[in-house]
Length: 372
Image (cartoon, rainbow, N blue to C red):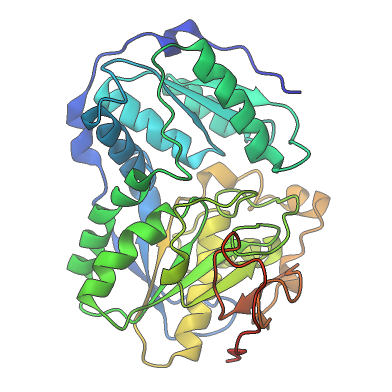
């Protein structure tokens, strides 16, 4: 069912720990964004996690490995095996070097060549599956290969980023930094993939600001919030499975954003604010600008998970956009309102103020439409 690329033996033998790397974790800047997305808005704050060593998910990666070591689940020098679409892979490469663990990652054939090269340059052993599973897509195919690797590598540890509470715990430092950098916060906008950073920061932030609203941002074609699973072009947010780290009860509303909106936002950010990123960054920027417009006087913040470099051949490439039917000029300027997630399939920017765990609410009740 799957095939794998050639791998290196060096990635599965012990490596010396470099704990000094941990001093580079986090400490990212917060910037005010006023770029038209697509029109004028009062501005919002963006935490630039793409400037961190190992990226945003280095926080989660270090937390998961340290937690496993404390529980005796991960022995010194043992290999770490995980599935990734790229971003967590960089974080685990960082954590593996810092803590002295070889890292084996399972990606898929849609992983960008530049990301493959970067992961291998960091000493990662990379396995690629060549086709999505009939049910569960690329994620299910990657997980099937991952289980084979666990059986082949005695003593190996699987962090299981989708369901590991230490994923969310790792973002306590992110919450602390936001609290130190902002005097007040009314609305938080978070992209959702594994559910780690949204679930990890909302508790501390609401203890500081009890009335804080949280808006989740998902990708069209993702099943996290109850939409039907479809092939997804956007990477880094969304899922074909239902991660248990998603804190469904903490969200006040959810938006689904499509590729045209994300691409348009990324390019506008690059032209007008210099700081930009990939699919997740474009999606949350679009929604954060909308939130700033519809909540006059509110202090709005979001997290930009990564920078633009990984996406030069996709988000910022005209040939890629044309080949995939992405027309940034057609991007929606406001979300379509749907009463509950199963009411209509979101093929572009859509919004719902009813949020429920799809696995716990198979029969959604009609929710109040929250038009703005």
